[in-house]
Picture 1 (cartoon, helix red, strand yellow):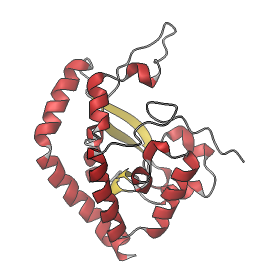
Picture 2 (tube, helix red, strand yellow):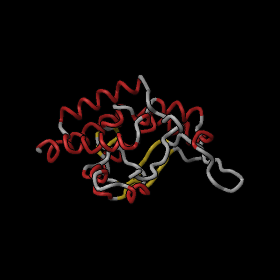
Picture 3 (tube, one colour):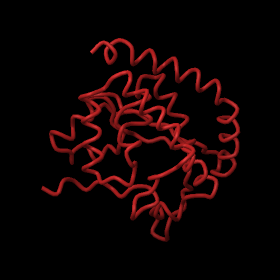
Length: 203
């Protein structure tokens, strides 16, 4: 497909550069605030699998503190989410640093969301197809319900996107993503402030 092979990447880089320039005042402001709130660490950086499972470092604004229990383990997500962090997450501003990942070539604007490295060994052959494309800042699953979806349904949307990617589909997903910023739905699952872990397939 011409779009996927020749045009998707240049459009990703161009749009990401423009958005980083436009959002630079917001980025600077959030970085300064989180620098003081998180003891000099405004960013959350974590290994994630990308295209063909290649590992890269995902960059996000840090919305949770590092409070630990008496055994030295991190407290549950809901106990570490700060008030400002919750606001940043509800407006999806925590995702802004990922435009850097797009420019670096780790990610695309649209694609299956990059999940945890530990999930790689739990996927079925069908679910592994989500890694046939670069992961995205947003994706089809994000506009279809985000964390309210079951893992199985998320993977169905991811693989469908991989098989049907097009310029107009990407435009539709991006437009609907902008709408979700102003109508934040599905940010939390029914049982977690983020999303419960994927434990593998039932069958």
